[in-house]
Length: 335
Image (cartoon, rainbow, N blue to C red; front, side, top):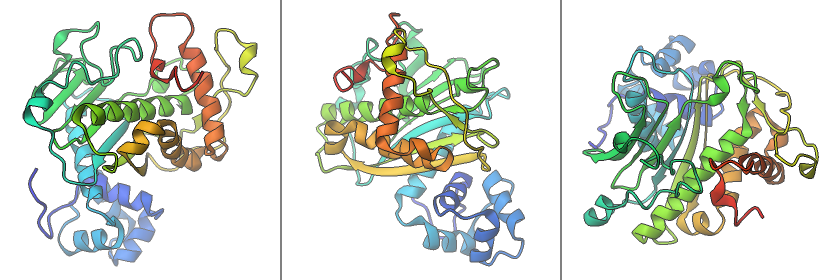
């Protein structure tokens, strides 16, 4: 990855993410930057119609960026976007969990070459493994190349992917999926299910813990973990109704109603942790990250106890007697 030079154009995702994290509207950001074109200029930067470069880029970074990891995270999202849009039929909506170490890291070459299969969450705990590899799937759904380990389903380049992931030698990782909630006939009526956010977030956290153990990362090594959702404008967040868990043997709980709808098409939250916390308190990290996102759409889900209640219901539904499970890695923690 080349080093950014002063004045270079910023990725459109970075402009958008910094604005959202700073809780600024496009009008407010334009005012703070002194941009004469106002909201229309900020919108053009975020949509990629015009570059944010030169003095404006440097001023925006100085005002809002805080740490260099923001730029690295935006580049990771931008890289995922290029793969996601490889075919004209790509999905507008997606969710992505990304992780970037805050200190310079390089996984030993011989160790990196042998990470998969083996370092992923095994298929008896998460269907097809996490990140998805070849457990019950064609062997070429993943591989290693110049960018590191990567995977995509479907594998044909002329088809839009539904799942993609990548792990780099510098220990950066992302996993992106198309939301099932947008499918026709979804029980959520198109709204985001908090259980799905917990699933993708905790899967990422548990995978990072396995990776850290395999690569002997120190407990003090710091990670930034980011959760992004695209295509959420006009959508809300739903969860399971809080009927007694014991009252439903198979765990198919009815869905509640959203409390409000997102005015933004893209939502993004971030938390920092370290390897020690990832490995000893993974649920704490997951609740912290999903809680930040819930605060924007469902404040009643922002509390860790409310999220654990939803997670237990999600796991009860996951453990319905079938052989296909996605949360089996939680069995020892949610007894």
